[in-house]
Each structure stands twice: as structure tokens, then as C-alpha cells.
Length: 413
Image 1 (cartoon, rainbow, N blue to C red):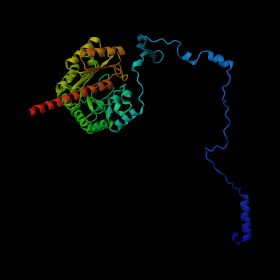
Image 2 (image 1 turned 60 degrees about the horizontal axis):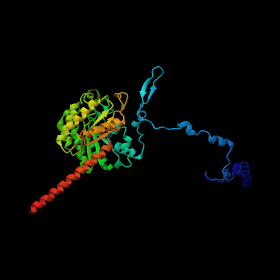
Image 3 (image 1 turned 90 degrees about the vertical axis):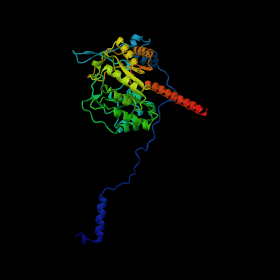
Image 4 (image 1 turned 90 degrees about the horizontal axis):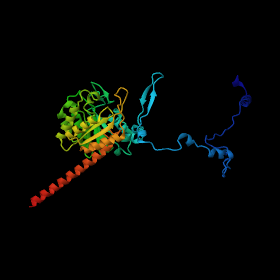
């Protein structure tokens, strides 16, 4: 029927429908940051307000610092500085005394960009460091240099699982660790070349499950590093290879510059501190064999203090080390990694560490790094050894040049 309506009626009906619909008004949208109203006028006056009697009384009274710090700060005595603080911990009725960590053993938390870059490089190449695995307190100092060339990282070869279980060490242990990574020597050399270091320390877990103890893998890594970056000085901190001195000689002749093997403690404490397969005189024979394999090689060892050793025992260790011509020794404080490890017998003061440094030098050691936070790969010692090696290299080149000159003069005659 709608189709039969007249056109005029259809127009009128459509107009009536449109009149009943609400009219849409055009709106303008503005940006959210558009300021429509002017900001309120500031209430700050150009001239300061006059002081009141209340503010005068407040300013004349005690300040906040009077409640925080004492009025007269007298310098602490040596005994007060080295006094250990204790605290009671545990539930009520079962509290026990706990010794707080001394102030000279506290280190900052690593957080700078260089620390993160080194960590990312290690993860990308699947490499491990003893800095992380052994929870070294110096990781923020060694990894946090102003540039990668100023940083130091001790690369741990042959995986992150050791076949031995020393009571002071936090590295994972297992009788059947993972197989060796055949690409590790190449990846290690590539990482060190990328960092542009002048001195590097290589160490490894003990691998008693291997016939050679991993000596060929260690030597191959050193050779790769010298091929890719011959200017890098290499220190190898090895195990004892179960007393197989042929494996020691193999690593010593692989092109490294410093051979290190840690004694860890005195002869009397060795059975209770180290794994039963690690023996005191066996470690001495390792250092002796490395020196005999390459006489101009610098040999190095490290000793922990705070395990219950006596002065007489430490004196004997130093004399035994000089008897096998060890060049460098370091002293550091033992710090308990977890509750599963042996307790700290004593926190040795910095003055005592300085005393043992002087005693070691008096016995004829080439260098001694001694301090609460010193570890076997402490970078201050590395800088000194690096300078010694460079001086030796310059001296050898001068002797070679003089020899060539004398040979030419002899031929001319």
C-alpha cells in the first residue's frame, strides 16, 4: 500500500519521522594536553616572609642531627674497630648467638653496566666462571671495571660440576658430571679476544672421571688463546690431576705464563678442610713439577686464613713452598658460603694479613697479596705479575738483540 501513496504524502511522512529524531550537534575534539584555562596565579612572593617568634624558638633548639649523631664524635680505637658484633637469633627460648660479618669484609652489590655486559657475554658463549660458582666476594670489583679491558673474570673450564667435595667450596659436586664441551676452548679464546684483556686466569673443576683429569682440554684452551690473542698473558689455576705429574708438565708447557695450584691450608688441617683425594704433599709436588717442566714459569699458590691454623703451621707452609721455588703466594679470609659448609673459626684482622705479607716477602717470595678479600686470582696481584712478565720479555728481547749484534761483529772479523 505504501507504494500506492502519492509522492506528496510520502514526503510529508518522512519529514515527520525526521522531526521526531534528536538533532546531532557538531562537536569539536581537542587534544588531551590542550590547556583551556589559564593557570592560577602563583602565591609565592618575591620577598621572604618575616620570621615569627615560633620559628625563632624552633631554630634555636636542637636540630635533627642532634638526635641521629652524637654531639662529639671521638675516633674509634683499634680494638673498637676490630671488635666483632654479635646478635641473638632464633625463636624465643631457643635463641643462639650469631657473629655478624665484620665491616672490612662487606662488599657492594654488583650492578653497573660493565658487570651486566660481561655476564651476558659469558651466558651467550655458554662459559662458566669461578667468580659466580664459588660466590667470590670480589665479583663487583673484578667485573665492575670502568671498561672491559680493566675488568677481570676467571674462566672455569670443563663445566660447573666438580668430582670432589671440599668442605669450604660451594661449587656443585657429582661423581658423573656432564661430558666436556668440545667447543669450549674455541669459545673461551673468542670471548677473551673480544674483551681485549691483557691478563686472564683460567681455572677448572676437578675431573677425576677423566683419564687425564682434563689436562689436554686445559692445554688446548691455552693454545687457542695464544693463537687468537698472543699478547694476552695466561695464568692457569689447575687441580692436582690425582698426582699425575706428566699431566702437570703438559699444561706447564702449553704456552701459559703463570702456573697456579692452591695449597688452601696447612698440612695439619688439610684432611678436614679439603677432599680426601687432595693431599698436602701431593700439591707441593704439583708446584715442583710445574717449575721443573719450565724453569722460567712463575708458580703461584693461595692459602686461606681463619680455619683454625696456628702461626707455627703457617710458617711451615711458607718454608715448604720456598723449598719448591714457588714465586707468589696470596692470603685471604675464609668465608662460609652456606650453612652446609664448615664454620669460620676466626675473622682475621687486616693488620694480621699485613704481618703475613711482610713475613712472606722476607722469606724470598717474588710477590705476596694478603688481605681479607684477597683471592687466588686477585687482580691487584695480576697487575704486578703482568708487569714482571713484561719486564722479563723486554729483558729477553734485549739479550737476543745483543746476541745478534755480537754475531754480526764476529762474522765481520
